[in-house]
Length: 111
Image (cartoon, rainbow, N blue to C red; front, side, top):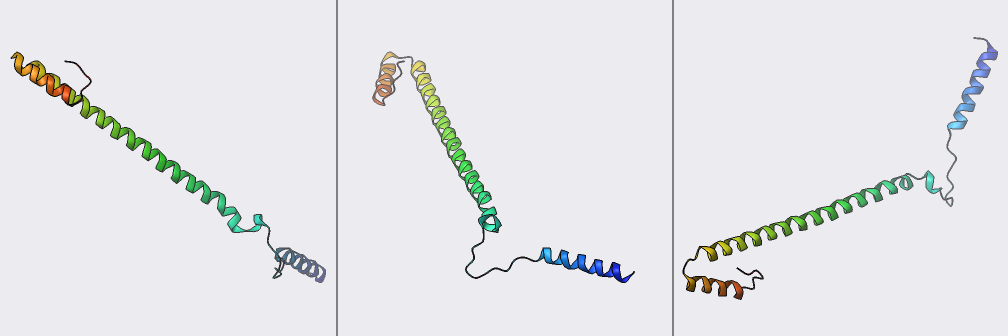
């Protein structure tokens, strides 16, 4: 390798090294927000919190719907049982007594 090529190679290496050097931070100098790792991290953190909050809200709504369905099913079963008892009671006095009990419990249905 000739001396000229070696000198050019050394100059190119020095120029490349100078381009890779970060500027010195002075004590009073602030960095720009886009230069900070924290500035790039905040949108992801906020998105994560939003996703967790939405999942918790969805869980709450679905749990309430399941509970309401179970209550509706239990009320329907209770009403069907009361109607069956009323219809199976053959003697009229027993049937009237059951109607009075059903009315006193606040059932809106007429048998």
